[in-house]
Image (cartoon, rainbow, N blue to C red):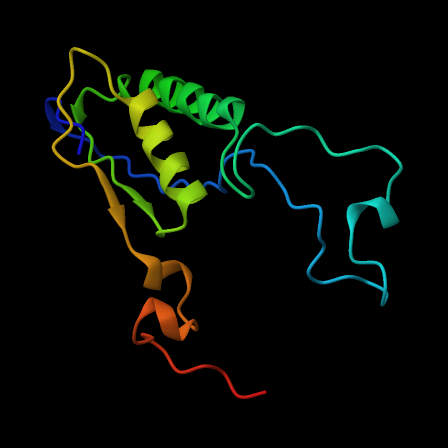
Length: 140
């Protein structure tokens, strides 16, 4: 929660996808049998990501931190109490993305009383490992 002055009349919900991340050489849902590696689709090799598979790249995390800093400039135009809540699931790249965004939103002069909230069920309502679903899975 970003604490400033009086209540603000405007509320916004912003939804972000995770950071720019490394990828695997394997393709899990191939379009055609036998086409299960990236070389089947391009002659250009994937970059050397310098990070574990499916994790945020350093530049990807920096981009979200920059995005948070730009959002912070917009939030200061509302001379108010802005409840900034950052919610993530528990996948590494999503947590890193959320923390990077929060770092960008913060500054030395501000106090954030709330950090990232992790709620895997919110993002995976039909995944048994995430917890008991809030809704029943639709019939097919």
